[in-house]
Structures are given as C-alpha cells and as structure tokens.
Length: 263
Image 1 (cartoon, rainbow, N blue to C red):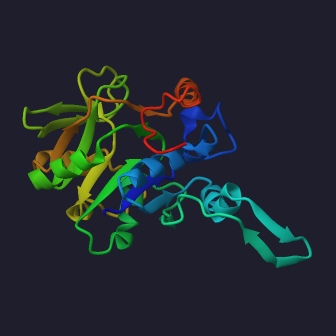
Image 2 (image 1 turned 90 degrees about the vertical axis):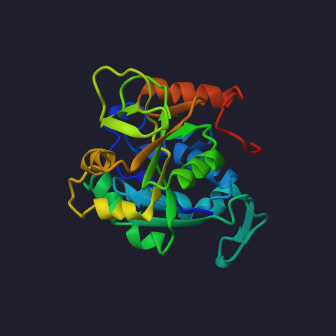
C-alpha cells in the first residue's frame, strides 16, 4: 500500500464565507470534515498511512485527530479521576497512521511537498492530493496506469468547470502542456489525485514561494515525465459556498458518489 500525502496548509480564501474559523480541510460535509472524507476514500482502497502538510490553523487539524477517539466513541469516566477514562468501542479508523507535519504558515504547495520528503522514506511511489476535493476515482486503475508508463508523475484529468489547471493530452495520455487556472478552459483539467514517483523531489526545492503546479510541473512536462489518467466520473473541490452546499446536499440525500464505505 502507498502513503497518501495531502496538502492541507492553504488559507482557503475563496470559501471564507462558509467558515471563517476553520481551515478549509476541516469544513464539514455531513458530520465530518471534507479531509476525513478524502482519507476514508483512500483507506477504502487499503491506503491508510497519511502525511498531512499543515499550515494555516494547523493546531485545529491536530486537535481534530488528537480528539478523534473521544469524538467517535461512547465513553465513561469519573470526573475526579482522569485515569478512569474508558472507551466502549473502537472506531473503523483505528488502523490509520496519520503524520501531522507543520510545513510552514506561508509555504506554497511545492515547498510543503519538499518538506515531507523524509516521511516518504524509501517508498518508490506515493499518492498526492489536496485537502478540499472528493471524487470517485478508481485508485487501483490509477496505480496500474502509473506503474505501467514509468514516468515520474500521474495526474487525474477530469471534466469539471473551467477554473483549474488545464491539460493538453496526446492519445496515449502524455501531457503536452499544463496551464494553471486559465480564464477559459476546454477539455480536461487537473483534478489533483496525483501518483508520484520519489524522483519528484529532484524537481523541488525549499523555496517558500515554490508552487508545485507551476515550475515543477511545467519542467516535468518538458521532460515528458507527466502523464494523465482520464477520469470521467464524479469530482468536485470545495472551492465556493455553492460547492459546499452541493457536497452537503449529495451527502444528505445518500447520493454522494465518493462514499464507498458504510455510513
């Protein structure tokens, strides 16, 4: 199983009207943060070791996981004896391993990724995604695609609204260009849900302003090291209040395409 790196450090300025007091990964879909939904989805494929790249309001994300057992379990305790605390059952996430890594308050995505290199260890490949988007991507098929082409990075190419990194592809899936957040988008765009070879760190440095989706990804394109896995199913980031309402409505109606576990 591969480690899952999740970028959780941004300010989330476009969705401040939903929850000013929370970092975007903690904004809820139903009873749990969108970050939890992302992690549950990866865990459903057997990927249960997570490296969270923290920044803005990192303490709140840490507190969520530190208090996870209390949040998800019935318990008993004597108020005069803290050592008497007893949990009455285990939650389904008891086998998760979560690394909560401070990667800097103002660091951009490339710097955050570079700063968790040691947590990858000697693993050849690892998943990489953002802490604000869900989808029903076939992660097994993505892994098979990535291992089959042998390049450094695979990106999931999707068909959502045209406000993200636009991809121009060949028939075999090789990326010919990567345009970050174009004004007008046609065709497929970057949906995140990357799978990376550890050679990706050769394209990164520790500059605070290093944006992963700019120079590093463009250099990979030039070197013919970026490939796109086509996904025609559901994908949506929580970028705006409208996205927030849509995701929560889907969840409330039991129509959330990304939920493949028992609720």
